[in-house]
Amino acid sequence: DQQVKQNSPSLSVQEGRISILNCDYTNSMFDYFLWYKKYPAEGPTFLISISSIKDKNEDGRFTVFLNKSAKHLSLHIVPSQPGDSAVYFCAASGNTDKLIFGTGTRLQVFP
Amino acid sequence: DGGITQSPKYLFRKEGQNVTLSCEQNLNHDAMYWYRQDPGQGLRLIYYSQIVNDFQKGDIAEGYSVSREKKESFPLTVTSAQKNPTAFYLCASSIPRTLNTEAFFGQGTRLTVV
Image 1: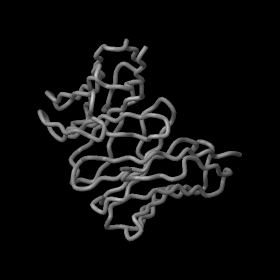
Image 2: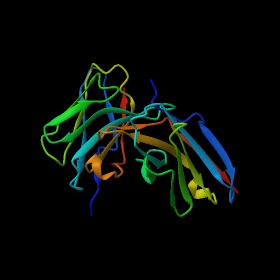
Image 3: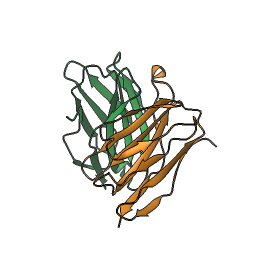
């Protein structure tokens, strides 16, 4: 049972445009959500997070939106840059330290 | 400088042998995790530990074992009972959940069974 789902395995965006990566979750007990970026053969690096008491969190070019009623979150990258090309994972946690990841979306930003 | 270190980066194992992957952190984090990454399946949780001398099974614990004798160390043993051990293994650590902070990852160990 996949509690955190990223239904788009890949996304291709032109440099300078907006990238929107989506994530859905099923467990209503999740109250903290994170986005990680991963390059091949490396560990994921943290990008941005959001608590369930908020619906938006912004950090530079990265903004995460949370829609609790729809159990949906999204990551917006504006403007997209070639260096943003990587696999992006969303993750969620509830009242324990257990962190559950989605299957990832491969973002390619082309010139 | 602080961080989380996994070793070795590449590991080869013969079928039927146990192998132990190392994970050390000097971030003073209480919680540590082991994940496995397979193509198209994201990161799946194997085991996690919230405190020394305590650990819990994740979603795919069968064929794996861990120990948490020290705060800094959380080694993972891949036993011969693991049916498909070839994968990329990632270790992570974090401070207690109540502070709502992120987990930090090591660089991973790629295990190949030959």
